[in-house]
Image 1 (spheres, rainbow, N blue to C red):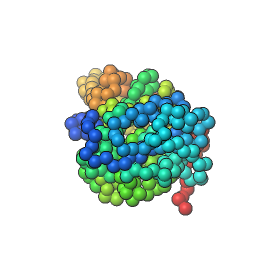
Image 2: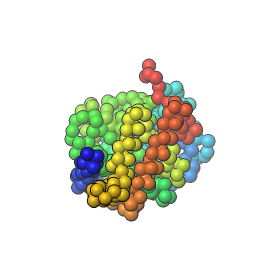
Image 3: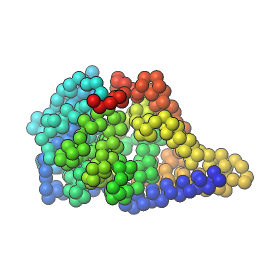
Image 4: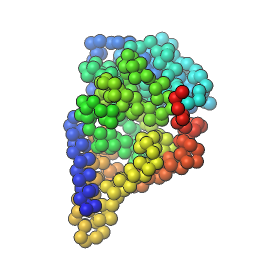
Length: 370
């Protein structure tokens, strides 16, 4: 019975993966779009001195002719803002100092809320301080946003992974997106459950952003990107997503500690509750670890081998599609064990501190919105 359950589950995930590999849009290098609305690219930044120069330098070189870049220095204890000003061009870059974090707000959401108040664009793009835009990235995004008539257009950045922890954990996010979320549902099924987005790159029509309430509507939500995408679906607006295809790329974390804490910050919010997270841990042990145990027993060896191959194939296919190392798929059992460790970290933070810890702050969800 367990073998049958795992086989059916992996078959469903395999079919979703195959459909997404065939249908998931990719950003493509293009000429300047026929229409060039003014675009505000907004970057919340807190203690990003090690990466911000490269990020701003790339944004200053965009082919797109009609844009501004706004960086909010969120009370950094390093010289993030000063570095950005040194690298940026005065006619394109505005650096503003963030106001103190009010009660009931999460730092990133408060920073985005402040930036949109001064943004002049018809298109709002929120992007992270470690996201690198190749010179044709903005052209490609705006052109496809116009083609699809999207109200919210989100890009799944190509992830750069260097250390062993990054290579084993970061691509798991791509596997979840490509293997678990049918892009057809995200684009065409008008149910909030199919809403998803990547906070590393979210492009909004200004009117749509205001309509769903902007970041104020998710001010205490650590999973603001997914929540906003679901609000877009619930309001009957148009959500579209694309793979960054190396035009928009990001190195999220640097080493095991960063990876562990970065994913622990979001994983509990992603599943909604501690019991749901525990169920998810058990689920992934069942489909990616238990088949290896089946191989040890004569009566289940063949089935176990087949299920192991299916699981590794899913991981390898999603890696190839998102420009990750296919060979790392062989260590999928290790990935599951490390993700379990990350989940336990999130659960510990939840009960010990009332929420995840990130960049010197404890992120707690407000009891109410007032």
